[in-house]
Amino acid sequence: MRINAERLHENLRQLAQIGATTGGGVTRLALSPEDRAARDLLCRWMEEAGLRVRVDDFGNITGRRAGAESGAAVVMASHIDTVRRGGRYDGAYGVLAALEVMRTLDDTGVTTRRPLELVNWTNEEGVRFEPAMLASGAIAGRFTPEYVYGRTDRDGATFGEELERIGYKGERSNRPGPIAAYLELHVEQGPVLEDAAVPVGVVEGIVGITWSEIIADGRADHAGPSPMPLRRDALVAAARMISGVDDIARAIDGAVGTVGRIAAEPNVINTIPGKVTMSVDLRHPDATTLDRLVAGLERLASDVAALTGVAIGVNRFWTSEPTPFAPEVVDAVQTAAEEMGITTRRCWSGAGHDAKYIQEIAPSAMIFARSINGLSHCEQEYSTPEDLEAGANVLLRAALRLAGIKGERTTHKRG
Ligand SMILES: [Zn+2]
Image 1 (cartoon, rainbow, N blue to C red):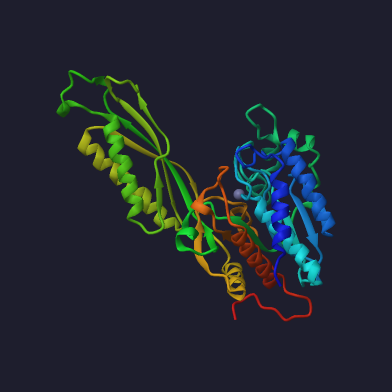
Image 2: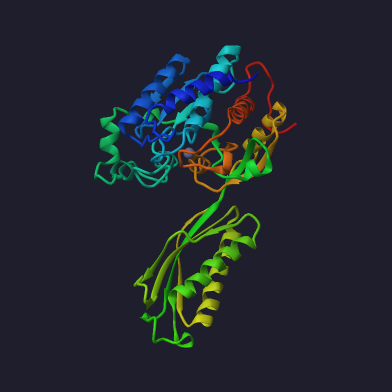
């Protein structure tokens, strides 16, 4: 059994027309008129595919395909909101591939043992309403409805008002689930699969992230009359910190480290910088290793301070713990790919996804399809039709393994 690739690509093409940008991308911010139009189209397609469609109190859209048994469903999900001038496949691919799975099962007359559900999560990107993954977080109990409804965009409009305005505020009783297993198919958003020359990634989890602020306190002074040995140049200290962060991350397998934001004061051509504030983003799949990375950052700060005479403070102000996915769901994805003869690579997601929160309430895993040059959150984001087809076929097989087929004895473990 294979998905109909033509139908999937045609749907991707049609959805990408809603909010299409001149540069070939999509701007479809959460709860915008474009989001509403895309939701309307998606709901129509879901109904045409025979799904029972419901909308919950956060605007999440769920389409259910009955199984031989009632009760907990195998859920396939992603999102159709985008960033500004984002790509055509980020999110939309996972939703439309899940729809294609449902249609393929209809075409082949298959009834699964467990029901299947397709979910479109509201506001995954967090561009219009921060934070990201707001609705899946609420479903997982991380955010209260009051918190969600009160989030405001930069024009002061609230999530709650905008949800009602586009006509997608439904009932609490319409929330997705109960969830027997959760699958999220997504384009990779990084270059690892391309580098490994494989089309599909079996995602073992979402990495932990920690953010620190670094303040280097030196002494501002005239650039002319201040001899080099007598300076306390905060930007020179910051430069050593930046290259040190790079060294720390390179020394540990699977770690990444980034200084993405920096401000020097007074930022004047003929004044020695007196103060520098900068950010450090460190990521790793393992929480203990993440702590080791921060310890390395603190050691680096004291070494650089001793060397330069600049006081350096490290404030670790935010951490998102690593989320390992459920081994039985990861194995279902791996086995599904092997059955299809599709080569894969095990990987971790360096970016957040709704699966992070859903893993807290149900066994979950993700599937990645290769991205050309690893580009995402930009108009140049691209995956080949062949790779998109391969990922969707893995989703189909994995969902069948997890849901079971009526009349067949099934196992979720690898044989
Ligand atoms: Zn996404």
